[in-house]
Length: 451
Image (tube, rainbow, N blue to C red; front, top):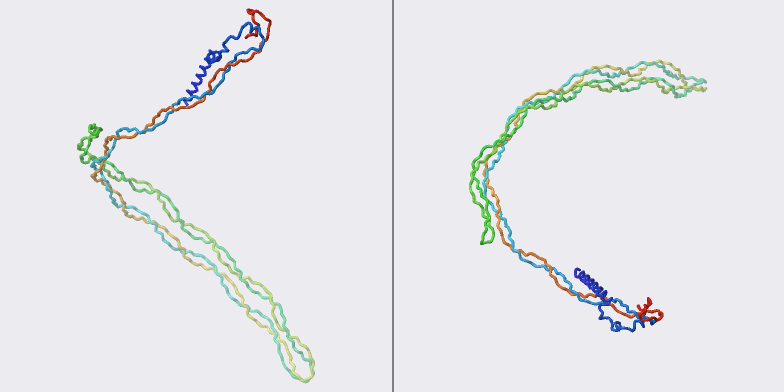
């Protein structure tokens, strides 16, 4: 792109130079390009002024011609190459050394102590009491009463006679009559009476009771321990090794130092305190309640009813016969009889009965018990342990690495271009002139002729 821009600028400069040249040579590249006939005198100027007719005028025109040129352009190619580079790399190595140290190991032990405390136990007992109450009992009794009634009894007698007589022939008929009698029906009625009974209701009460308790307070003390020997290494140095052409690390000297150790001892101390605790107690409270107890009452209600009682009646038909026949005479006798009719009576008797009613009593008894309370004791024991302490050493190593490097390589390429080159061409153009009066050669020319 840059080469193309330079080519355009060069073309513009060439056009500018050509235009300046044409301006200096009246539009032509030089006077050498004009024909010879154009520069030769064409006759007498005065005669030409006086003659009339067609004149020719030289006209210059610019003509553009296409021209093929070859130009060079620079092209940059990217090349990649591997370049070896020597560098130094640090290698860290981890080494270990043994170090002794003392630790305090706690040993816990669970012990027990006897603690006396007083507890209250409820003693629930069921008792009975005698309650007297009066009940009514029905007493049924069957009685009899004498009822008098009249009955008719026939008295039949058979006789014989040899005469004509009229006899009565009995015809028996059954008839019914209404008899009023009394009967009793039992009516049952449910009644209620008020019965009192006693129940025990638990009542919860809350009260404050002092309670002896305490806390274990742990106290920490610093106690001097044994004197131990520690191995201390001085810091190392880096020194240049001309044989290896690198720096080598040399560790420092190790020396033994005595150090006083201390250990922490923990001891526990019991701190008693008294606090008030809320205790809920339950006591039994008697309460008298009422209830409606049903009972049944029976009574006899007399009723008069009418019933149909059958009875036999005899009617007689008279018949006259003549023969000796027996005949019967019947006479009726009225007789009064007495019969016993049963009936039931009901009477109520009051009876006092005694029944045992259970109730519960609750009493509290105090009892002293001994229980074992666990507590933990801690003792510290010393123990020597060995641990491996890591430390790091550093050494340098020379390495050769290949680095990829990119660079631009220029090269020239030939390009063919077509440009337009301007050229001036002269040609004769006829001009029509007007004729005027003849004059001398030195006379003033008529304007517009001979130009």
